[in-house]
Length: 300
Image: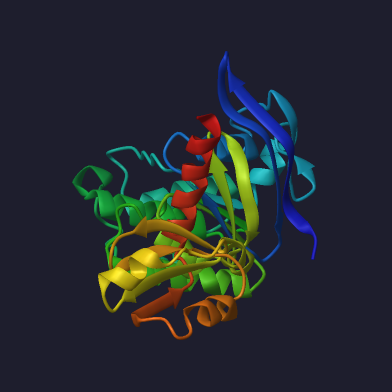
């Protein structure tokens, strides 16, 4: 399957300040792709370059095989976009928003808009000035989805949605991806990306530090381990094996990361006074935190 989004050594600077530096990504068609990073990491800068709002300082960004700066107008015809700082005119309601957006796209969006509004439980007659933040977020999603775009670019799309509406959105996005559409989902909500996406890239200080499937990311991260000893004295006399990197080593409790197969740890603990043992894959929150902890250690 070919790449729908292709970024090659993409750099965007704001004077001396770096937005993103030599970012390279390849997003296949039909993917649910998570783009992770905290505020200020470079997520929104990358998206603005992809959408032709910013010109790259160097490198290249292509969508549908077209250059994101030179061919921005053609690319936007088949993209649905929800910005993280969505702003709509106060006088607008959902019905005339669909009418205006439809006129710009040369398509009648009224029917699809009404169907989406029903799914999101949004009254299209309410004016933006009278909408809550969550209602405005729903309207932005409807406008991004109504023309059934080939590519959806969503920047923090669930920040104002309640859990039920988040689930509704996830189901819609999975349906779109199953039908061959591509979703580029930017977020710092790590648990959400873990539920929805099948591949993630992590951006840190403007640079990509990981780009792989969640399964590979977890395999590389090893296992989280907690060992609770039956009493203090034996534990104090035991030297941890080199494949167990401890982050907490108290009298009766060890916590850390297992590198390599679980069998090695089981063999090491055989015959020792273990009261309880917990071994599991780290969640995405833990993986993300480790990337940033490694960065801090590298700088020291």
